[in-house]
Every structure is written in C-alpha cells, then in structure tokens.
Image (cartoon, rainbow, N blue to C red; front, side):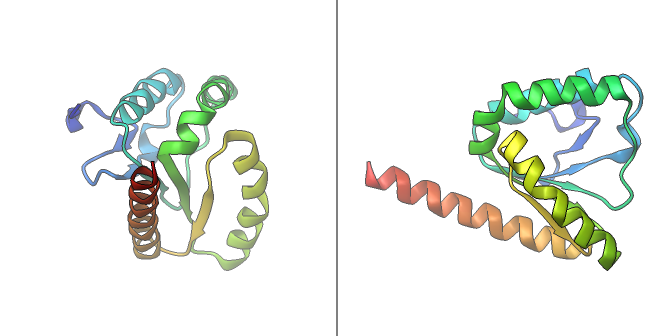
Length: 144
C-alpha cells in the first residue's frame, strides 16, 4: 500500500526505506502525528531504518510518555520491520556516551540502535542494514 510522502511531517519518507526524522517537527503535541506516521510506515510491511540528524530536538514529557507507550505496545512489529535507529553525532565523546545508552533502549523497545559520525556514514550504514535485512528475509522465506 503506497503512502503519500507529502502527508508525512515528522518523517521524511522520500528515501524509503531509509527514513529521516525531521527535528523541526518535534513540537509540543507532536506525538499523535508521530504515531500515525509510524503506523503508516508499519502498514508498508517492509523493512526500514530511521536516521536521526545531529542535534536532536527536545520533546515534552507528555510526548515522550505517549511515544513510549506506543513503542512498547508495538515492540514486536517494530522489531521485525524497523531494522535500526541511527543517530548522527559528529562529536566522538558524545558518540561513546550514546553507544552506552543504546543497549537499554534496544532492550526496552526491541529496535537496534546505531551511532554514526556523519550523514554519509549513517546513509551507508542504513543501506547495508536494508540490504542485509532483505537478504535475511528472503533466506527465511525460501527455507519455509
């Protein structure tokens, strides 16, 4: 089921299956729109990766809470379709700190997390993950 790229505000889906988060869309009350967009992505039933640019926006407590509930409720399907969340962080020391936090988030939400130094590195990593995910899916399907 194709989706209307123009209907997405929180995510740039023009490069699907590589999705880019739009920090300027992280405004108070955005969680509802984020959930609708995530549901549209999951409805594609195709593997994807979400890339977060450097300098993420702060979200309100209420938005974080709503998204956390949604993420936990959709943990299984997200774990199957969202191959990774990739955060871009140019600062080496901040990348080290972020990597230490990824294990907790992966366990809580069932989605692998990666940290890249640049947009180019994130895009290359996302492309590898998509290619690997598709190959793994084909291998599993042919084994049935």
